[in-house]
Length: 129
Image (tube, rainbow, N blue to C red):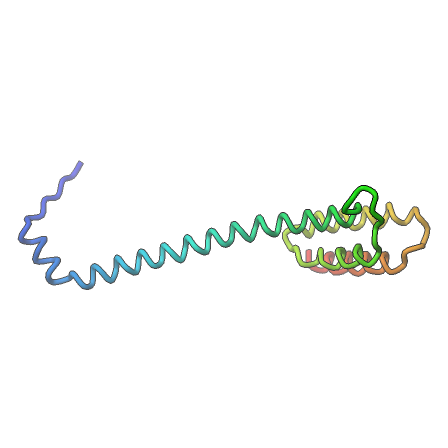
């Protein structure tokens, strides 16, 4: 291990000469670190908020909020439209929407607006992947 000894009078001379520059550099480093920490925590909070919202939308899309509630066509169409905003989930959303279209098509053609929104969302996501 290398040991560097700086005489006290030399250290005091350095502080007298460059003290303001050293304090500015220290302040800048502390400021930059604070910004980095803030942005990092914000990114993590956004990640988990997006996770919660996406999974809530999927839950509402495939089933009613309460066990005995009815499914509302317009709510489902709006949810399908909103799935376009979750880029991180595009691969899964695409597979899910295609699967829902296949499953729901067995109920005849009673929900044309829903199928139209499914087709539009599938086409949009396919264009983005």
